[in-house]
Image (tube, rainbow, N blue to C red):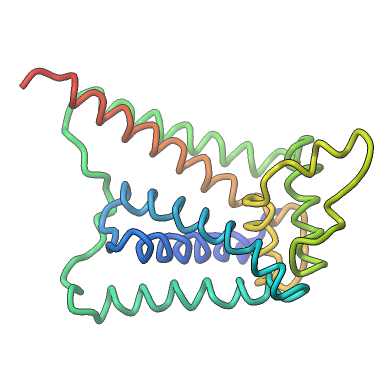
Length: 214
């Protein structure tokens, strides 16, 4: 069962990833579009940094990452509320051109997001969610870092080639929550799905704007 604490933790981590992305991109996101880009950028950077962390801090890389991420998020929130540019708020709506197709696409995105999360709440993991992502997350959670236990021989060898971005996110939720619960890891997939929908919308919007007559 997805717990409220796991959902809140996943959102806090998402904001922390976006804060790291803003720092890397040298900006402060004030729209959903920029926030989505910063979220993906920060998550990718954290995933890459976790490799040397695992080498330098074997057994403690996950704890250190779990501590640094909220610090980045709180620092970003503090600067947003009390910084020099605190007058710049957060635009909760994407900046779009008001066209019929844009409104229709946003409605479709909203319905698809609701439908996905209802199914995510109702259904259990299938093969990838359990055997690939959640199982790897459990290994990271218990080892505290990437380790040689990921290497296995035989038919299962292909599974270790999957990247550790999703398992790392899941392991961070479990580490902050203090317990590894299989179903509690599911909120991140709703965030990934929303990110995919928003990215598709913005790509279609850009292409549509470029092809429209001046």
